[in-house]
Length: 158
Image 1 (cartoon, rainbow, N blue to C red):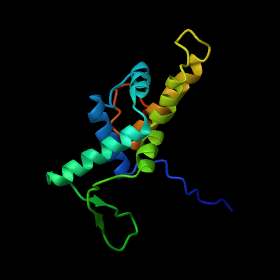
Image 2: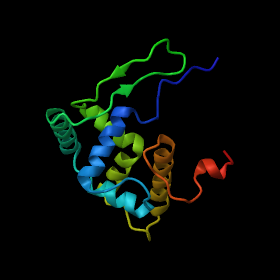
Image 3: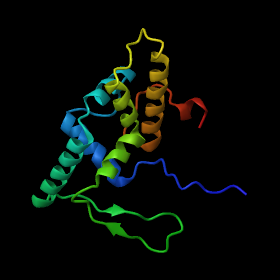
Image 4: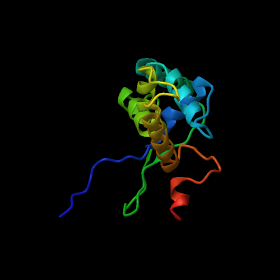
C-alpha cells in the first residue's frame, strides 16, 4: 500500500511573502527572466542571516506603520470552518530558507558561489538543468514566472 508523502513542495503564504520582500530589496522581479538572469540574481543574494534580518525588519516596520495588509486564509477542501491568521510581523530563518529552496534560488546561489563554469564548460549542461528545474518550480508554485514561451504543463497539453 503506497504511503502519502509528507513533503509539500508548494510555496506557503509566508514563504511567498518572504520572496516578495527579498525581490523588492534586491530591486528585482522574479518573473520573466532568462536562465542567465536567474543565475545572476541568485549569485547576488546576500547570506541567509542578512535576508532573514531584512525580511523581519520590513515586516516589523509594516506592523509599526500599520500598513494595511491581508489575513492569511488556511481553508482547505474538506475543512468544516474557515480560519485566518494575521499577517506575520516576523518570519523564522527556516521559513526564509525554505522559500529560497522551493523557488530554486538556494541551489542556484550555492552553485554560483562555487564559481561553476561559464557556458563553455561541460558543467553548463548540469547548470542549465538546474535553471530549468527552478523555472518549473516557480511556474508551478505561482511565484509569477510567465514568459509567453510554452511551459512544461502547456507542452504536455494540460
